[in-house]
Image (cartoon, rainbow, N blue to C red; front, top):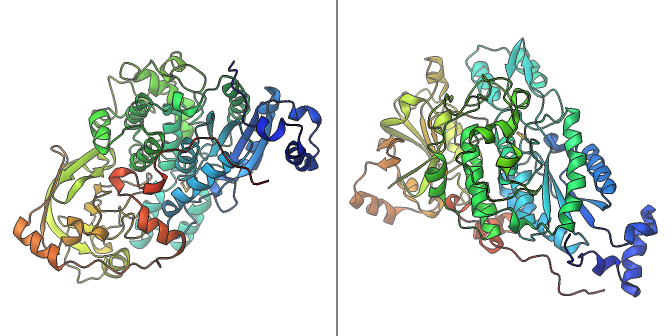
Length: 573
Ligand code: FES
C-alpha cells in the first residue's frame, strides 16, 4: 500500500469553497457522502460509439467494470473520448489517432482521476488511448473489448477483412453474384466485437496483453462470451489495487516489455500496424525503440498461430485453443521475466500453467507454422529510413523478385487506371503507389495492398509485389512493401520512381533497391515538385501535416512525443 496522497483529494478532499464546488455538482447524480471519503477515483475511459461498430457494446462493459471498481472500494467515473471506427471514418482513422490520444491525455490529466481503465477495441482505439495515458503516467489498465464470433458463410468460416478482399475479387471477376455479395455482409459480422482475424484490433489486443497492460488471458476472448465480462469485472477490481500500490505506467512499460511484445507479435502473425503504434507509445514513454528493433528482435521468431490472414482459424478458435497465455508459455525461454504486468507478476509467470487444447490452432515452438515469420525491415535506396514487409502474409516465391515498376502517383490515379485494358502491366511488374504516406494523404491510409488489375485476376494471378508509403490492414495479405520512409510527399526516393524502372526486392537480405543510377536520381530530384495536397492546410489536418513524423518514427506529432505527467499546477476557479 502506497502512502502517496491521491490526486482526487485535491478536488474532493478539502473543506473550502472549492471542495464544496467539486463535490456538490458531482452529487447531482445522487452520489452519497462515503464516495468522497478518500477512496480511489477510477476513470473509465470509454470509446463507445454507434459509429465505431467494434466498440458499440461498451456501454454494457463499462457498467461491468464499475461493478468491479465498487467491489474493490473505488469510486468509478466513466468518461468518453474520441472514438474511431476504422470502417467508417474518412479519410482514414489513422489521421485522427493522434487527436484521440490528445483527447485521452488531457481528459485524464484535467480530471480528479487516480487510476484509469482504457476501454479499447477497434484498431486505433487501442494505440490512441495508450499513447494518451502514457503521457500522463497514472496507474493504468487496459480492457480490450474482444473480437466478434467467427464469420459463417454457406458453411465456410469467414474472417473480417480477409474475406472482404476475397469476396471483392470474386465479385469483380464474376465468381460471386451481387446477392451473394450482400448476403455475405451479415454472415461476416454476426455479433458484437472487433475484427476476428489477426487484424490490427486483435494485434493491438495481443500487444497490450504482451506489454503487461491487461489481466492475463483477456485478448482473445470474444466480446460475446460471458467470460469477457468476468475479466472486465476483475479489471475494475484490479485498478483500485493498482492505485493503492501506486503501480504507475512507467513500472510496466519498460524497454523489456516492448521487447516481449515484439516477440509475441511475431509469433501470432500480428499486423504491420503494430510497428507504428508501438513506436509512438514508446516515444510517449521515453523508451528508446527503433524500427530496426522489430527486425532484430522479432523477424526470426516462428509463427505459432494458425489464424487468418496468415492461416485458417479465427480469434474465437484461438481463445478455445488456449489463447495468448499458451503462446507466451511456448515463448517463455525468449521473454524477459524480470518485469511486471498489471497484476504484479510477469507475463511469463502468469502463463506458466497455460494449456493448448487444439494444436492445429496453436502450434508448439518446435513445430511452428512458419520457422521465421516476424515482420522484416527492408533497407535500400528506395527506403533510406526503412520499409516494412510481413513475410507470413506474402507469397514465398515473390520474396525475391525483380520487376518493372508500374507507377501510380496517387490513390485516385490508381483507381482511374488500374483496370484500364491498355495498362502495361503483367504478373512480374512491381506496382508502386506514391503519396499515401503520413503527410501525403494525409494520415497514411490502409491502401498499400492495392487490388490487382482485374485482367490479371481473370488470368489467375493471385499476388504481385506492391510498394507504397502507405499502410495495410492487418486483415490483408500479399507481398506488400509498406511504410516506405521517407515518404513521396516530402521527396523520398519513392517520389522519383518512373514507369519501367527496375526494382529489386530481396526479403532474405532485407534489400529494396531502385535500379537507377545516383546521377539520374539526382537529376530527377532536382526536377521533382511536391504534389498539391488535397486536404486544406487549416484545422486539425493542417496541424497534422505540419507536425506528423515519418513512419519509421511512429507517425506521432513531434510536439506530442514524451509526457507531461499528471500534475496540474494551476486552478482558475
Ligand atoms: Fe474495427 Fe476491424 S474495423 S477492428
